[in-house]
Length: 102
Image (cartoon, rainbow, N blue to C red; front, side, top):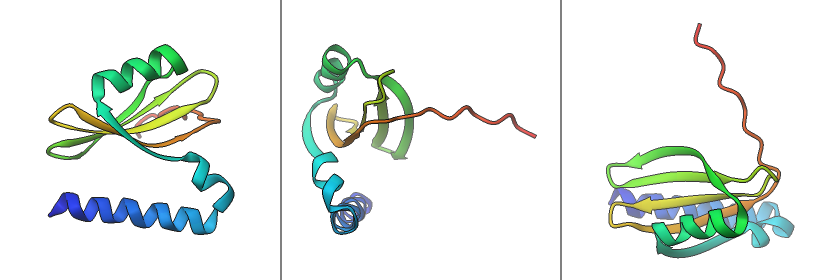
């Protein structure tokens, strides 16, 4: 149930993006799925992208951002079965340094 709501949210975001930013949304929204190991190898070998950030979405799903020094980046969603989907791609990625804790 939780995953269905997540996919509906993602679909809503895609539709809103396409409506608000028609020129860039169509070019950047990608949904390609394969085994995680294959996608990660492709990102590294062909796009020079390395893991830049990771977050846990729920008990069985993680979200990862792969980025290259040149600025291109990929948002990847993976489940526990090893299946991953490229959700978004873009350019001009900039990492922001973590602020020290007070």
